[in-house]
Image 1 (cartoon, rainbow, N blue to C red):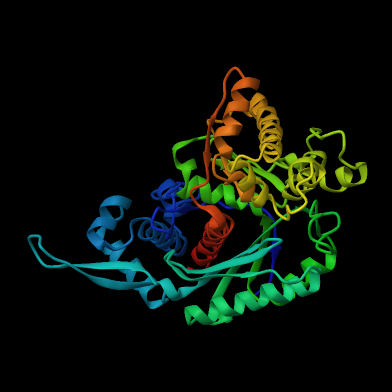
Image 2 (image 1 turned 180 degrees about the horizontal axis):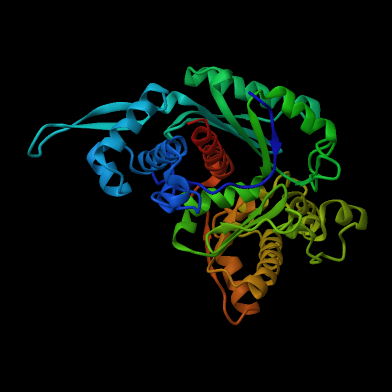
Length: 424
């Protein structure tokens, strides 16, 4: 299979059960748009392909479905549907899924997509953990796993990522040859001029062009590398709180700081793929070192997990080794920690208010170790109400640590599905 390294989200949907599904979006080149048009009426081969694609899209969206139902929904004749289904079944793309009984007349044969016609692998490259999942073409997650990241260097981190992928394929009882799409959620933004990632300062060596080349060589299937918070926003849109909002943003605060922005139901990447890189907002404390601010961005240098720990030690909390410990101390009434947490909420609220003033989203979803800390969302809301005359709803992500992996599956399944339609 030809290899490809691409950047950019593809629309998809992840339902509440954790299975990946399709969103029916008619397009100008769909059979429903052109069926019966004079310019294609004389091209039976093209009509056959268009009919098969149309049926595949409906079967994917509906799940188990009968020929009668497909004919009713597509407007195609029953003989045309029967012929197309026979062809798709012969090609191994669909299968008989059983019979529907309990109605008048003979039992109806039900069809569904063959789930094992391909697999999608989603991987989340975090600083502290690597996470992943493998889903089949029906959207069912066959395997899910995570492991602590033990390597700081890019080469060893790549090796750990490949080992995680091997583990997932083995758990699912699949083979790498059956994996048709790999999506990797990673910090940073792809720079086409260098064919490499940029803005990934927390990952030593990760911005080298060699990383992209080695990813291509390591994964034989087509591979997409996408910003981790962008794919988390896709998952939030399709199976999280974003289902109830046309426009929202996901703000992740933890080891790093980033944002994914969804406008009118679509992920907005920006002209250079850098929309949401709020780490570079000029909201910094006076004590932030200029070199750190240049490398990580002023906001990240002032409000990331390491900045919280640094602030805690600066006020005498010598035993603070993590942001979690600082937040726990604040919850237990330590006045020094309480001041630090309030300052953190103020910085995050300032960043969010900058976005609200421009985009006016309905919802802000908080993600990451700090973003999901107990009680932190309420503190951000209090600061927002002080800063803004109109504040969006603020909620903690319902997807948690799996948001990036689930978003990778959303993106990967849609790309794999399009390839499957092309194959048909």
